[in-house]
Length: 158
Image (cartoon, rainbow, N blue to C red):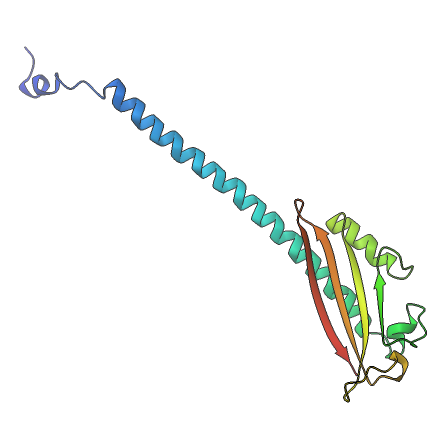
C-alpha cells in the first residue's frame, strides 16, 4: 500500500521538459552576459596597468631631471640654451635612449618627450640660459588596443 503523502506527489514527478528548457535558456543567457563582463573587466585592468606604468616612467624621468643643476636641464641634452624651448624625443636623442629602453621594456611601442620651456614674469620668453624659471614637462605616449594614449607630468625649476 502507498502512503497518502506519496499518492499526492505521484502526479507531479518533477519539472516538465518545457520548464527545464526555459530555465536552461535563462541560465545560459545570464552566463554569457557575465562572461562578456569578465572580458571587459580584463581590458580595463590591462589599460589601467599601462597608464600606471606610463605615469611611473614619466615621474622617474622628471625626478632624474630634478637632480640636475639648473644649467644641466638643457646642457645634459647637449643643447646650448639659446632657444626659449626645446623638445627632446626618447627615440632620437642619445641621452634619452636609456629612458627609451625602459619604455620598450614596460610598454612596448611607447616613447617620451621631454619639453623644456623658459618662463619669465613679464610675459616675454627669454632663452633658456637667460631664464629664471624653466618648466620641465614629460609626456609618455603609447598605444593601447589601437587607441593612442598619453600621460604628462610637469614641474617648474627656479
